[in-house]
Amino acid sequence: RLWLKELRRAPPRSTMADTYGAVEGVETPLTGFQGDIEAAPAPRSRSRAAVVMACMMVSGAAATVGARAYSGSTTGAAQMAAVEPEVETLAASEADAEVVVGSWQREALRSVLKKVGYTQNIIFGHENSNREGQYFWDNAGMDAHSDVFNTTEQYPGMYGFSFQDIINGNKLTNHVLNAAKQNAVIEFFWEADNPVNGGGARDNTGYPCAALLPGGAGNANWTASMDKIVEAVKEFKIGGTHIPIILRLFHECTESWYWWGDQKCDATNYKRAWNYTKWYLTDHAGLENMLFVYAPAKVSETTWQAYTNWYPGDDQVDIIGFDRYAMSGTYKDYVRADCEVACAFADKIGKPCALAETGIADGIQNIANPDWFMTDVLDNLMNRTTTETDICSNLAYMLTWSNEQPGRYWVPLPHQPTAPGFKNFTEDTRTFFAGDVRFSDLTKEYGYGFKNPGKANDLHNVGITDGPRPITPTEPQHGIMSSVSSDVVKDWGPFDWSDDRLAQLPAEEQEKVQAMLMRRN
Image (tube, rainbow, N blue to C red; front, side, top):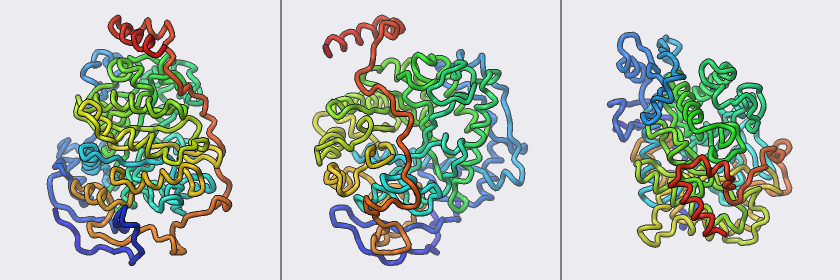
């Protein structure tokens, strides 16, 4: 690699506790590169000219991109044929040259996630962490507050955001850029409105999972929404380098609360919708900086549905994930059982494994166990015991939900019951947060991220007045705190195996489920 020597170093700051280690400063984006565009591990950045030339080489003198149709999984090619669009091309113009989105950071991120899993570490993520907290709301993305930081003086290693927020008119560019400058991973999910009538994600009027396809009643609205996503993602860049994005598409499909889920969609149209959406965002629109995580729900109870029947295909999915919420009394067992199923499947097909969204249903505010983050999360998932049960230590990341208000949160503030365990969780060598120098060294190995290659002192000095600082739980910052999400009604108990659901399974799978139900009773 050729590293630039001219780097702006952060001013001296105080250091964190020895149990955590040094934290790095913010990078001046690197702009020089020489090398092969598809090489792995990937270089940190490239000149715009190199990017444009590489894209032209892929498609010849016409300089077209996105020429592959979305036919999707090789196992589902016949299903795709009925709705496969004509192959489209996007001619590269001078304007396009300014927004070419390269794939090298995407591939570097993929390598980082695999390595994190192999090294028995896990990245901690928090939804909307720099946008909303129990006592702050920062819709501009300029204050760099985070309840994770308020309690631990560290920022999460992953930030989660919502594409539907962008479609609804919110601008998240500052939030994404500030998170990426901390060397955090960026994840988006899309709790999409009904493309047929504009209703919410729970409105299945017009069978939207089929209607969004070409020729369907919802296709125009669906493509309009995707175009808004494309324009937003093109703004997510530091210097000339686009930030890679993990997209959790059509999540929790094995449950029935969303229009793309079980009993509101079907496996065939779900895979068509997934493959078409992925094709449109990547091959058609030219976004080459996305990894796609597939995250069904309750996978230890719906294994065949989750990873066979509804699975979009190895060529359509980059990360094998699962979502799991539960009540406090059952969470520990449920999340472990799900993890063993999901990570075994991921290991079988050679993909990273992720706990894509998780927590106690409706928040951890009523958890009395101060060590909950250690006993029920970290030790439960990452303790090495026997070969058969080590698979959960392959998890690359976990992400928990937003802190919506003091009565509904998933990350504690310092005075709240679960804070001691969360601090221990942060300082444990098995977890990665944004400022962890071990994580930064790993990302540099593969050329991922936006931090300088040297080491600096603590980025999170709470004594400075012009940067992030912990806020007290009695001083709301910058406007009102957010209201409780309207999307709270989900069944986080056992999966409801109705007669209709059982009848849809092959005979062998029916026997497995019935045996499981007998053991449960």
